Image (cartoon, rainbow, N blue to C red; front, side, top):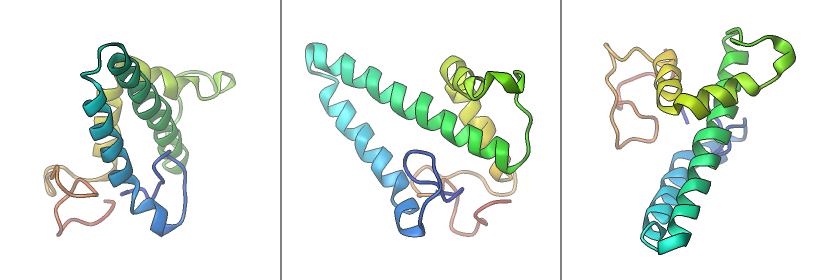
Length: 126
C-alpha cells in the first residue's frame, strides 16, 4: 500500500489500494486454515505461494523497476522473466530489497502490524 498498488500489484484507485494489505493477509489466514487438510492443504499452500510471492511479487518488482528506472539484470528481450526469476529463486531477498528501496529503515524502523509496514510518524515513501 506504500506504492499505492492493488492486491495484484497494479495501480488502482485509493479505495482499492487501501485494502491490498488486508486482502493478502486474509488470504494467508485462509491458506493456513486449509493447510491442515491432508492433500488440499499442500495444494492451497503451493497456489498461495505461486500467486502471492511469484506473480504479485514480480508485478510489484516490475512496477518499481519502471518507476525508479532500475535496469533489469537480464537483457530487455527477455521481458519480465527477470522479475519472475528473482521472485521465484529468492522472493524474501527481493521483497526486502523492494522494502528498503521505499523507506529508510535506520530512521523509520518497520512495524509489522500496520498497513504500510511503517510507524505512524514515517512518510509514505522516502
